[in-house]
Amino acid sequence: MSSAGNKIDNETVKNYLDVLCDAFLFHKVQRYDIKGKKLLQTLNKYYTADAGFVSALLGKSAKVDRGHLLENIIFIELQRRYTEIYIGKNAETEVDFLVKDTDKNITYFQVSLTVRDETTRQRELRPLETIRDHNPKYLLSLDPEEPVHNGIIQRNVVKWLIND
Image 1: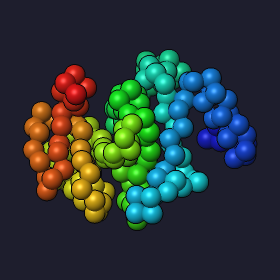
Image 2: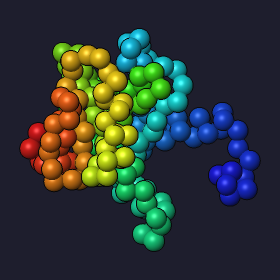
Image 3: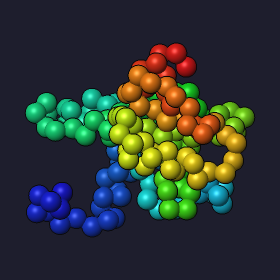
């Protein structure tokens, strides 16, 4: 809104987001301190309840960030599979999703369109590599390859969506 020349304060934005969440159009995901094992109060993320919502608002000609769209699709599927979903924070790194099942077992997910480029792969693996527990860690991408990187399982998103 401010890029369009409209002045808006943080409280107004918070109120708008709260209304969108109350209407089940957006979902708020809190940050979770992995090392301290507690919820953080700031820098929440928001995901749309329907991935088509962005296209409907912006129109078909708008340039949509496919990486964010894929992350949103993964969020929707994780919501179906798990009871709790958080954004993982570990020191200076961020894990896309930390999820807990009904027994409070933790699994970590990192999402990227592709990790074929070595720099991108290292950037996406780094947050998972800094976690010093033995919970499952997954790197989801559109790449057909499914290697294991030091215990981190890379999965093709389409296969993961269909088979798991």
